[in-house]
Image 1: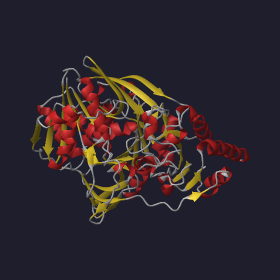
Image 2: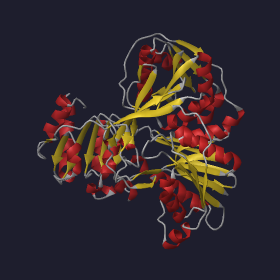
Image 3: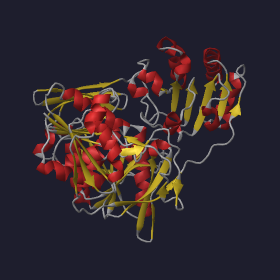
Image 4: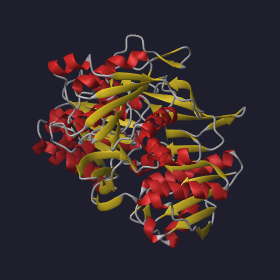
Length: 245
Length: 325
C-alpha cells in the first residue's frame, strides 16, 4: 500500500496571532512553526496502516525551504520519504493543484490530509484534490479502516456520524479519533536525516483568491462578576441585558 | 447572472443554518440586483421547499432522484455545478457545515471558482473587487479574501448571519440531474443521528465542561443545565483526550470552532487554544473557582466559585426563571 500524506507548516497552537504592514501580513517574528496537528493524525494513521513493511508513507508539502524542519519531523515520526514542492502555498487551490499534479505521475492508494490547517481552516485541499483527480473525497473523518481494497470511514455529521465504504483510492481529511499522534523516537530522529527529501518545482497554475488583509476579533468589555450565591442575578442579566435566554 | 444557494436538509427538513445561508444569499442577490435560485437535493416535501420563499428564494430547483437521496459529496457537487451553469449563476452559496466542507471545494474546482470558506459577513463589492471576510487562525483572527475569478463559491459559518424573513412565493421546479457515473463509488453503510441532542456547530447555546469537573461521572449536572437551556454539550481538549467525553464535543483550536449566542464554560481555565475556538461566541459566561483563570479576561459574565456549588444553584435559578415565564 502506498499512502501520501499532505502536510502543512503552521504556527504553534500557543501562538498569539498578530499582523504587520497595516494588517496585511502575518507576523511570523518569533513564531514557532509546527506540523499541523490534524496532519499529525493523518501521518500516525498512515504509519499504522503500513506497519510491518506493509507499504510506504510519503509526505508532501508545498512550501519554501523554511518548512524543511517540519518535513524532517514527519520523517522522524516514521514517513518513508518526502516531497517538497518548492513554492509559496498561495491558497488551497494552488496547493491542491500541485499535489494532484504530483499524484498523476506518482499514483497512491490513499491520500490523506488533516481535516483543516489551523492557520486558514479551509478544509478545502482534500476535496479539491479529489475533484482534480476524479477520486472520492471525505472531508472530516473520525475513523478509517482498510480491508483489501475497500476503505471504511466514519464521517462527522451534525449531531451524529455516517459510515461509508469506498473502493481505494480515495482522498480523506482526518480529525481526532482516527489515530493518536506519534512522538518521534531517537532512532527516528537519527534516520530522518538520511531519508530522501525530494524537492520538485511547482507547475504553473492560475489562482482565484488573494488575502487582502487581516483583522483580529474585537476585544470584549470588562467581565461582570456575579456572586456565587446570586445565580438568579446571572439568569436575570442573561435574559434582560444580554438577551440570550 | 444570478445567485444559487444549496439548501442542505437533514432527514428531509431544513435547519436554521440553511435558512441563515438562504438569507445571506438573498442579501448577495440584492447587492447585485439579481435573482436567488435555491437547489434542494434529496426527499424534501413541497411545503418545506415552498417555505424557502420566506427567506427570499424566488425559484426552488428540486432534485428528487432516488440515487441522490443520501448525501454523496461527489455527486451532489456535479448536480450543483450543473445547476449553476444552467441557471447562469456566478455566485454559489452554501452552509459551511460538515457536509458543506466536503462539497464546496469540489464545486469550486468544477466551476473554476474562487472559494471563500467560513464566511462571517456579507461580501463587499466595489471597484470591480469582491471581498469576503472569513475566519482564520482557528478563531484567533479573520482574513479578508478577494475572489478574483468570474465564478465564486462562498460557504457561510453557521450562526454568523441572522435569518431574515422576506416573503416571496417561490416557483418550485423539478430539476432533472443525476451526476456522473464515477460519482457514486462511495456507499453509505450507516447514518446515526441522535435526535435528542442539540448539534454543537449550529447550537444557539453551548454548555461546556473542563477538567475542573474532576471526572466523567460529574457530567450529570452539566447535562441537566444544557437540557434546561436547549443547549449543546461541549468540552475542553484535556477532557476529550482523557476520554471523559467524545472528541466530537471538543471545542478549541484543534477541535470544533463554535459561535453560539451564549457559551457557558464550567471549570475551564481558558488556554489560548480553547479561547480560539469560542472567541466568536456572542456572550461568554465563565464559572471557575480560580479568579485568575485567563477565561475571565474574555468573558462577559463570570462567577468565581466551585462548579459543584454554583452549577446546581444556577440550575435552580433557571428552573425558577422558566417557571415564571
